Image 1: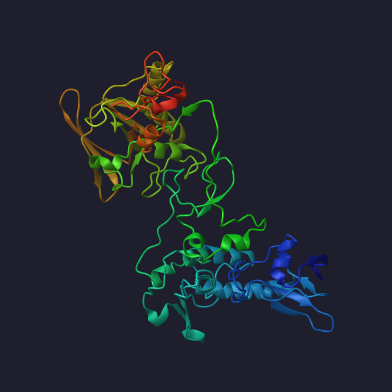
Image 2: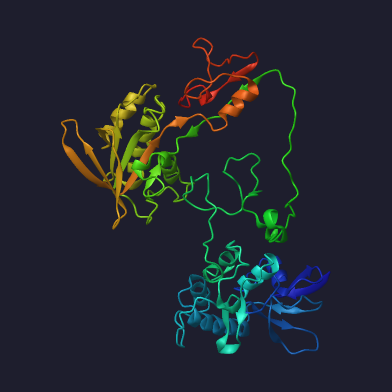
Length: 482
């Protein structure tokens, strides 16, 4: 073990550790823009400088990320000399990249609001993080530095798009100033990993907890997005995990159990509205599904409960709900049972979040408020200003200039009306899960013409096979209390 002092506090660290790691072990913070635990130290940004006192040597300034921890060393992280050196460096970086929020924040910590030298408005501080990431972790070397001094540039070989680039986006992710490095190396655009829990309204990393109530409530690696599992590269999560909990060789296990009965509860799938192109779902960013809107309203959702529309994150002033999307049509001639009331609930909550001035119009065929207290809830929604318009909306059109949505419909007295909305919510219906055919064949149960499990009126949880029962919407669309 190496023994040294940091700000007069005794510290023990393993041999081979750099000063920056030792400083962080003490709970102290040192600014840096070029260091990453999983990459070779580079010492380029010079923000992590500290003052060291060694026996028999004059005090000096060193970059803590590249200087090793040595026995008997005295390290000081916040002396006047250190602060002056960091201030000069921060000012130079601010002059190079004045639009970077990270650099502006660091410069402000050292009293620099505007640089005294001419601004360059560059988007690169030559920290080398992207170069080291691509070379050391991805093994591609698709980008590097060319030239020296004032002619130094960050570019791919020969200044052309490099076929070695995977467009994995790791260079973009690690860049401290937000430069889109991958645009220099590849003609392709990195594809973000959409968060399925938030219905694709935001992104998630390749290692994440799938949803807050997941069991077990532990992060898991997405094998379809992990570079280590697909190409045997990267491995950064293993390098930075202090608990050493990463297991790349873990496989799915098949376990056989002897049981007395089986309950089939596969749930349901929501109708995919891309199949109905008249409403523009998937083409118009402000046409969303009811479940996406549910996540928008949630405090744990992508917008933290603020009612915003996806295209520009502005609060909508007019919202249209279109009912029976994927229900009560020629292909699915059944009612999904839940759409009317969840649209009513979402309209009420949206008005609570955004204010009473928010206009909510629900376009419906019939309101099916048959549950306990549902009719009262429906009447309350009308009192709160939710408008119910009886009409089957034929299509939704986008206004290109504003990204608003235009709905043209006929009223009860055959008048043609056209209205613009900031957001359109499709109340999508319930359909059997995609695996329903496989489940039926595996367990030997019958399905009805709509694809739900066939049961009898007097025995609604029994299938045609002894010992196999069903629960939930596998038998038919139903609400949670049912």
